[in-house]
Each structure stands twice: as C-alpha cells, then as structure tokens.
Image (cartoon, rainbow, N blue to C red):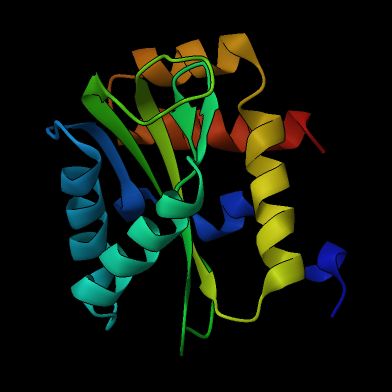
Length: 158
C-alpha cells in the first residue's frame, strides 16, 4: 500500500475523539486524558501514556503557534488512531517559539507504520500552518464546529 492510499487524518478523526476546553494543566494530565479516551478502544492506558511520553522525551512535538502533535507508536495496534484536544488554558509544551500550547492533535500509529505516520504528521502540519484556521479552532464553541472546521481545512489542503 502506498502513502496515497492510506486514510487521511480527517477520515480517522471522529466526533467522539474531539475534546473542547479540556481541563488540564500539564502535559502529563493531557496524556492521561488521551490515554483514558483511547483505552476504551481496548488499549492499555499505561501503554498509551508511556508511548506519548517516550516520544516527547526525544524532542517536543510542539510546532509553535500554540499547536502540538503528540504521537506515539504502539506495539500491537492494528490501525492508526487520532484525536483532537483543545485545552481550556494553554499549557507549557517546550514549543520552539516558547509559546504555550492549547491545540493538540494526537496520533497513535502501529509500531511499524513509518511511511503512514510521516504522512499523517505532514498532513497535520500543513493544516495547522494557517493562522486563520488555528484561530477558528481556538474560537470554536463545541466539538461539532471543530469537526466541520477540520473537514473544510482538509478539503482546502488537498
């Protein structure tokens, strides 16, 4: 399967995996909330949090402009999973521009999905490069509006 035939981030992101104004004050709290969300899909909370923390220990996944893409490889995971979290208050995330982060796109991918993993990261980086899009995500009143914004931005980036 080539990279063009993999599902896009938007295809993977469902309304039930979008959190608006999540009440977290640290990276660890965010990772625990993410782990709890995905654990309902038969993944271990501990394994998910450990994968996200391990990747973050290598280098920050913050892109700047208040956006980060925490991601991790999970042994035994069959399909990529994604979620979107907007925190109620920006949190420190070692961003290259020094700004705190409030927009998080989380990716979990199978352990050996290197090409697909990179495709998803590139897709998200391109989407979040747009200032107006980032501001619209920050201002969205609920998960339904976030979902619509993401779908529209994905179409623009094609």
